[in-house]
Image (cartoon, rainbow, N blue to C red; front, side, top):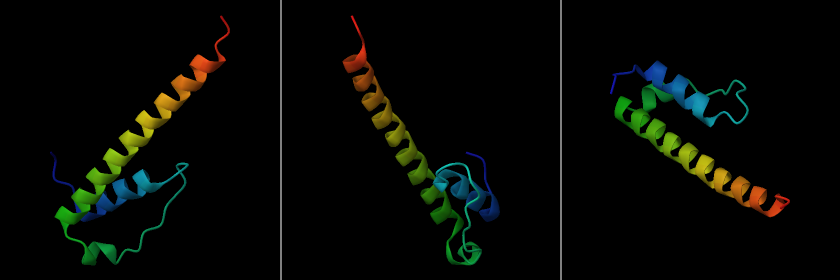
Amino acid sequence: MEDLTKIELIEEIKHLISVDGAETQINPNYLDYFTQEELVEMKEDLLLKKINVIETTKEYVDELYEKLVIT
C-alpha cells in the first residue's frame, strides 16, 4: 500500500464520508491529534462500511426488481 501523508488521508476520509459528493469539512486539528496509522484505520473502516452499504443496497434493489418483474 502506498504511503499517504496525513493531509492526503484526511482528503480521502472527507471523500468517503461525503453523502452526495459535496465538500465535507474536517477540523484541521485532527492532523495533529490522530496518528497516520489511526487515519489509515479510519479510511479502511470507511471503505469496508461503504462496501457493506453497496452490497446491502444491491440485495435490496435486486429483491425489489424480482417483485416488480412482470412475467
